[in-house]
Image (cartoon, rainbow, N blue to C red; front, side, top):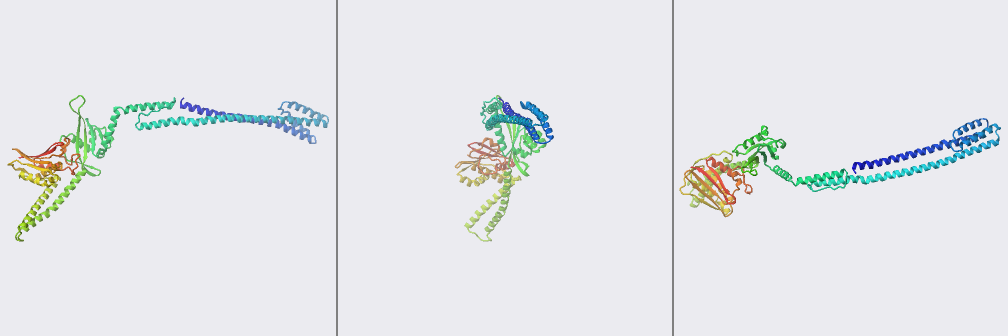
Length: 569
């Protein structure tokens, strides 16, 4: 039975019983009213008339007969009981005889007797009608009680059963919906009903079955994987923009929205070329994306009211379709890595080195001048031991002054102001100085420094100080990334046109995917724990290329690395 039908029948029956109860009460009240009115109208009036006639007889004078006559006519018109009419006729006859016979006492006595009879008859009728009214009241009470009890029983039944019939299925459905919301798609609702709740349970089970099928399908797994990837991309601190093969924006992470200054809904699914029309940064990125040689200089962007520097990286995604041999371009990924912190640290380091080097240079020069004065015989003659000490101090001061000069040159290189002092230099001196500089570091790790120099090396035209710094940096890196008790080899090769300086170590090497990035500014191989800003190799590359040379790296992961400096003769 349908819920609507149940409610209609239950409430309709209750409403009918309430109407019946009201009708029974109204009918019996009407009957009681009629019985009461009959008593008052029929019998009580007759008693009043008879009483008035008796009072009239007790009076003196002719007016009493007139009053009696009047009350007698009223009584004759109110003959309601059986035999009362005949008694009124007899009473009329006695009254007429009383008037004709000279108002004898015998006739007056008969009139009084019949008036008493009339009163007794009406009093008996009043008693009978009172009993009838009582019976009517008792019947009304019984029927009202029956109808009231029936209403109470039905209302109590509705109160007990109706809320549970409606609330229990709703509670079951609510609990099952919560299970579905918790990804428990095996949940089912079983209601042995043929009403709306039964249909709802059946629809719910159908929905749960389809959700379970969908959850077990590949599409659901792909959607979960897609959401997982989107969450990972959004959690990245780098700017990430994904484009398809038609340059449509597939995805952008939150950092990209902040840097580009556009909400995701204005970019996702839109053409990047259309966005580039009104967004300068997107236009610049698309220009670099379509350029084969990407500019290595950091990209400067005003973001959050400050200058931010980003390292650009463009990935061209290619796949090989099933059953085919050639790769197909399916999209591009633009990554902007925030290197502002490294840029600020580098600038601070450069300023610090420049300041310290400048402050060191003056006292060191003063020390050298004082040493020269000490060696002057006009001041005093020194013994051999004192001369030896002064010579040693003078060599150390010269070395410190040279290092200070190199630090100043380094700050110029890092600030982009490279000045080269190109002149013919002996390769042996460059290599020897670099080896001596790293000698202490190698001893600390028990690393052996091997040098291979061919005989009769021709001088090369380079900036000796800057080239020495590069070679020193390469040897220091080789030592730092080598295992203890290993070998770092420095070798020189020279032919008719080129001179090669190689630095080879026996460390872990560089993973193949990072070989093309080791000379990028601020790049450090992931997984390394050495401190640094990632500028050393980049500056080395700038120094060597400024001397029209090249620097390259060859590495086998797990075996070691080899850096090669090449100079043209």
